Length: 118
Image (cartoon, rainbow, N blue to C red; front, side, top):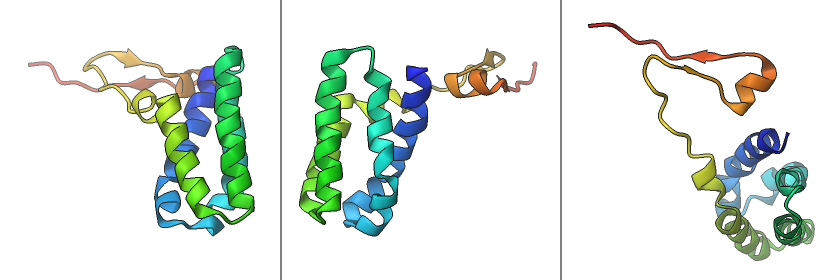
């Protein structure tokens, strides 16, 4: 369940990178809940959960108060502290292997890599 939250909400948070860089609060505000939900991925690690939740709370408060500089700083801090970009980078799919990741295994859909034999 935490890995599912990390993948689902982490991807949603990373998708907001362009809006945060541009300072587009209109695009960020409807997605603020994703930051809180992302922190749930660390709920079994209390020290990380508290640290990341504090950053996310400051980001959310900054967005609600229309302080784009706070939002940009806390977003960058959240990405750095969590290592979100590196975790969700994605490894190359091995050829000829059946690959099931957390998103596909929970939904019951497997991914099959196609290959040709020489």
